[in-house]
Image (cartoon, rainbow over all chains, first blue to last red):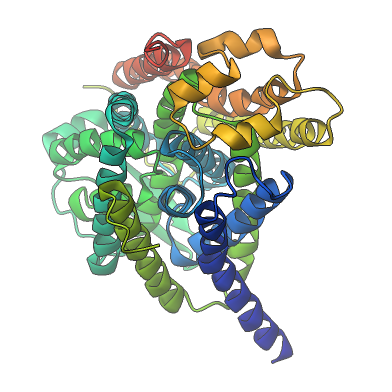
Length: 324
Length: 142
């Protein structure tokens, strides 16, 4: 009882941190503190670490990747240029995916047969997306802000309406999926049930990763929000395999885009390192809290935050100034 | 058409090797980032770009920022490894090269199985990642 109360209190604090730390940073930005700073320099990495720690917890509880929350929130409320936020966002998503990968591969939940062809398409086009994003940012960063805002609002709507299927029924595998041998089996540790799966609409599904790759590279977002619905609803892969394969997939897709941003000079360690470390530690705590938290409520809050961050990005990009 | 994979509940050996490499590499990268960041922020080694200069310019676009701070693009950071800020790139780069290393062990596995389609997919993926990492595509422009 006491533990439950403490956990509720802890979750509330974390949610407050996620919502108010960016506003705190935004207030600093508004007061002209970011440049020339009257704040001591060490406050920034601490602020980023604490914010990303909280973000990591919320991301796990809401079932979304860290990158999708990091980029809109940090670019909307922190004083950093969007180029550096996208660079750090990709590293955040990459580090999270790399850390999660080993467990998913060992338990055979992430399927190499499924991930490798998909990754080739997504990672190739994430390079295109990264180059396009950097070009647009050079022409006018407001274009990227507006496009990011629209994408984030779209993601919030997608998360809200997306009804994933635990075990989609695939009666007949298509020829392309069959030729590539995209199928598999694994043991569901929770139910001790064997899961056998195969794909349908494989070619169309793979084609969708062209767009997913471009979006991931362009905005520095991890693309789990798009991977899972395509794998699950379009290709007919069971939800657990889809989620695990999607997470593993990010370690490949984000690598290619991350290199483009890194080579361009968009990764500033002063910003990126506390973000990566904070989000990773937050994710570990989030996993532990998963059994007692109320994911439905947190999911709704995240949708609300994404909507707000998306609208803020549009507002910032268009220079309207209604939100903040 | 290649041989269909056996529908085993257990992952193939290369997948386990991939997982092990990923595990060691990811944690080594994160540990390295923690150590080098500590060195950076405690001032044990002087940085190439002063933190105050970073804070003054982090709201500028990347091209302008690089020009003001004299930060190199591409692999130019290797020449500045004696500076605390660029020391951080060791851990960051380790994370970014991990997938390429892991793919190499998959190449060996698929070659052994004579699974040509997946062998070519792996080789193409390595080519894509190496091109991205080389800096041919990402640098230039100022």
